[in-house]
Image (cartoon, rainbow, N blue to C red; front, side):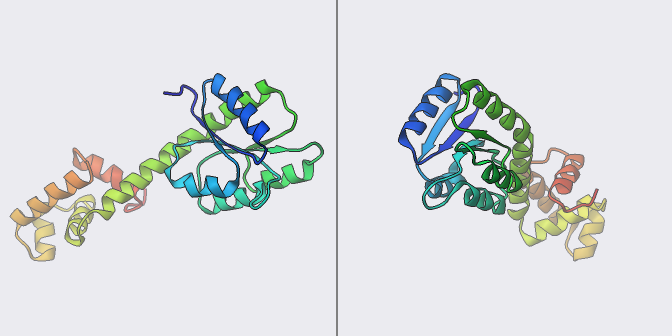
Length: 205
């Protein structure tokens, strides 16, 4: 188990990939190397949260295009861009497209490590939050139309009897639906169900 988190290195220069792999691995990060941005984007859906360290100038998809695509996918991964000497305009453009920071090559190892640690620390809560919200949305999506109606009734504060009357079904049937809703939503209580509904956007705060 890595202690400091995951880092995804994207660079078409093999020597650079190897040196970053050695540096980051010995600093306690889990490192995955990619020789181009397409390969990284193809793997992205299956990757654990981590920091992306990408070169800005690469054949095919460059660092700026990578940033645009990650932004379009609303990816929570923080991205650090490495630029060649004198590529400041490119670095500024990268920042505009959502890069957390940039480093000019050659850079000091300690500075890179500090930047990666800061990027992961800042982005992690939002990434966790996003994952939780997606998970809750998936739970809501698993409800049948009738279960969803019962859930909406419950979070609106209606009793089983009132929900039964509204949909012209027996209170006993509502109890079954209610139990299904609580199980599928993984809610132990009505207050927890209301909190989950708020996270899912079913209730406006």
